Image (tube, rainbow, N blue to C red):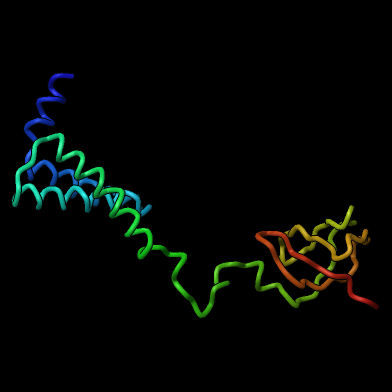
Length: 155
């Protein structure tokens, strides 16, 4: 335990810079946008230490506070969910099936069955929870995750 305490007491700006760069490099290879913020905080502490030396306890307090603040601010502005796309369902394969007509691959039970699309079977929820027989034509009207919402086509 003593070597760790000695290291922490002698940490200078170069140690914080190494920590910050290391965290950012790890972030590059394991992209999660989580380690980026503490990495930037460590680099900020490093620059701050060059301007105004702090006791080691104060360094860790500043690092902790900066990590929280920079993470909150960074998540606010660097959030992939806020990206507006002209094709929001581009990679949602099941949304491409809406409006198409398919046949049930097996009898449905309690309004749930399977629809054969290409070489795959997709879970389907039938409107009105009807029990339909295999081979019944259905039209996809909506999708939720990997479940297709279908309605029976009237003959």
